[in-house]
Image (cartoon, rainbow, N blue to C red; front, side, top):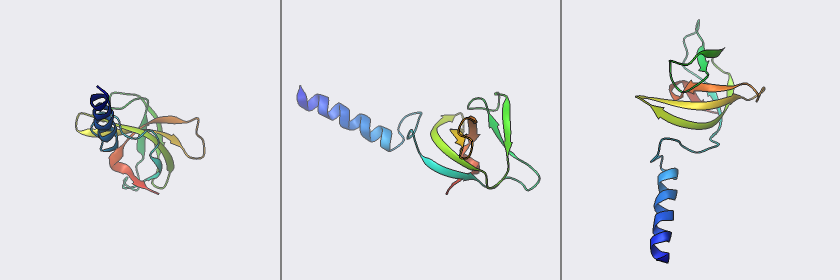
Length: 100
């Protein structure tokens, strides 16, 4: 019985570490907006998908705290907070983030 419980805990832990589920690490660290066209902004949305309202436009170089990411369709969306204004939170596409 103990070995089955231990095995289940190990498998669940590996799944979380390797990204085996819909959500990844809870606090992934600081990232910056990168790769957005010069005359455009990365849209921070109220939820993980293009069907959610745009909360804010973020230019390249904006520093964000990535809290978690989830896959919606073919896009990986990340829940973020502005580094300098942590109360401003939303969701952005992982494609436009790079580790700081």
